[in-house]
Every structure is written in structure tokens, then in C-alpha cells.
Length: 439
Ligand code: S3P
Figure 1 (tube, rainbow, N blue to C red):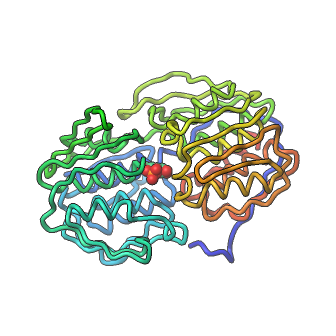
Figure 2: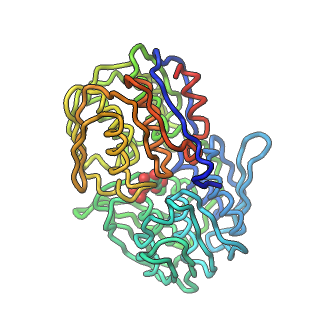
Figure 3: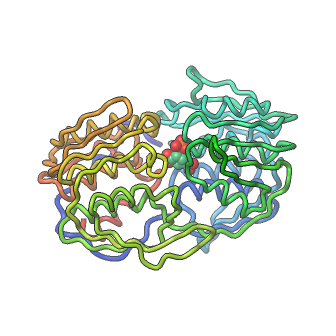
């Protein structure tokens, strides 16, 4: 339960240098998908390394409410019992997705082509976020929605009884929209096609193939065409979820900006649709090396060694945005310690994340004495070091909270955040882990 009266402020102070080897929790995108695909596969899917954080736990509860059981064994392994692509049933109570856009949007896709009725709710942050981007394509399959004003949560979904396949060109670069459409295609006869003009994270495609879905991908002049032949059963799988690069981003930047640091983050997923931050930090002069690159669970993984570095400002092109969309808050913190200006472009999607991240980041930087400039979809951060001393408003956004705690490790004065509770949506032991490294 989150209410403002019990918010948990937190401060962060200058650190001496971070050192050690660490692991971060499992990838959030893969964790949601593993539970959902397991819920519509036939048989028992087993998952190790699942991210046990609020967002993903809400997905597990929702899958159970829809008739598939998803539970953690005493051995730490998650087991999901699925009953086929049309096997979901109406839940008895509203499905509560908490803070998670991925949870609710992918689940809507999964439910849209099965004749069930579900009431979907979320917290105050999620209730502000646009759902029209998924309800519009899902309605083309025959699903019906009754949403709150502006197409937002709370929302009632009525799945199509006789779904018709759809060809849909993504109007926004969003893996959530792509995934919702593909998941609706699972229980639809015929061929569902998604055309993706700008590539976004491809975990849905990779993992669905692993579950035996009939999915093909071709590169055409207008983008990637992903086609799915519906109403073929999926087979339960055994999955191992590697570490989340979006969580690794916080200790990574912390080590770069805190003098005297040398850390190694083990077993991080390095899918090229997720590594834009590493690419950008390397451009900025970061001392980052990837050790022991290997394949695990259909994804490239490796250990990331990071040593404190003198960074310089760069221009981050719009084309890179989808591969680092969740990393702009922490990149902005790195940029405030770089020499010169960093300009980030193509940021329009930041406006509709857990908070308006462009506004929240800019306000947090300014509160800590960093000079910024911005436009509707761009941000410039003038580097040279952050004085600190500010109080940051986190707007129920885990990534804003963690970013400004990282800033405090290297700023002159301490930084403070108004509420640390939302860190639990993606990285429950963040503070403990950072403190063990020397924060
Ligand atoms: C996600 C996709 C991204 C990202 C989110 C996770 C996913 O959202 O911001 O944290 O797992 O598909 P969009 O697809 O809306 O950009």
C-alpha cells in the first residue's frame, strides 16, 4: 500500500569509492513475459532468477487470478501451470497491476482474444498513463474496453469471442504495444502482423519462439515485420532470467562518478536492444569492459567491469532512444559529472513513463544545482559536477529515486529524495546492495 502520509525519505552522501562483485535482480521485461507466456502454455513452466519485485509479483497474482497458477517454491524456483492459449478465465476480483505499465499492457493483450471480462486497476502513477495505445489495436481484434477519462485506468476489458487477425503498424516505438498485439494474436485464428518501423526490445519475439510459437521476422523497407500464426499451443519451458541491465545501470554510473571505484556486475543481459546506455557511456569515455560474454536462456549475457572515469559530454541521437529508454534519468546524472554538455534527443516517450521523466529529471538536476535546458523531446545537461544539497520529488517513480540517490554518492553536498518506497517495484534491495559496495 502506498499513500503519501507514509512516504519514506532517504538521503545519500559522498562515498569513498565502490568496490566488489555484485549481482542485480533478474530482468523485469523477461520476468513479466516468462510468467505470462507460462500462463498460456500447456504444462508447467519453471523460472529461475525471476525478479521478485512488486511489479512482477502483481503480474504473478494476475495470472493466478486468471486461472493459471504462478507460485514460488521453497527452492526459489517459480512454477507456472498454464492451460493453453485460450485457457484464461474471468477473474473474480479486479486485477491490480500496481505501478506497472508493462504488466497491465501485456496482460490486456493476453486477455483480449479470450471471451472473459476483467477489471484492471493500478496505482495513482499507472492511472495517469495512456492505455489508448493498446486498447486501439486490441479493439481491432474485437475486444471491447470501457476506460476512465482519456482512455486510462481503471478499465474494463471484454475479450473477443470470435477474434479476427490484425496487421498493425506501431505508431510509437513501444515494445509494450508490440507485445500486446502479438499476445492477442496467440489466440486468434490466422496471421497477426506487427510492423515495427523503429526496433524496440525483442524479448517477446525471442521468448515466444522459445515457447514454440509460429513466429517469423523479416526486415522490409517499412521496418521489421513480425508475423504470428495464431491458435497453436505453446509448450511449457524452463527459463533462467539473467540480471536486468536497467537495474545494473545504477551501480554502473555510481562507480563511474565515484572516484576510486572498481566494481564488477555479474550475469547481465546484453541483448543489443537494451545496451544503448553502455554504448553512450563508452562514447563519454567510460572505463567499462564486458567479460565472459556468453549465451544464457536465448540471450547474450556477460559480466560488466566498471572503474571510475573522467567522462565528457556527448550528443545522444534519437535513434538510440528505444535501446536505453529507461536509462535517461541515470544517464542525466552521469552527464552532470561529465566535462561539457550532454544533449539527449528523441525523448518524447519519457513524458509517459512512471512519471513525466523529462520534467522530473530536470527538476531533480536543478534542485541539486545542475544547469539544464530542455524542449518537448530533448534535454541538455551542463556538466562539471553536481553541487547537491537538493530535495528531489520522485513522483512514484523508482528510476527517479535511484538516480538521485546515485547522484549523492559523488555530489559535494548530500542529496535527498522524498520517497524511496517505489524502488521496491523493480529493485527491492537497491539500498542494501549499494551500501555493501561502499555507498
Ligand atoms: C518495456 C518496454 C518499455 C520500457 C518498460 C519495459 C517492456 O516501455 O520503458 O520499462 O518490458 O516491454 P515502452 O514499450 O512503452 O517504451
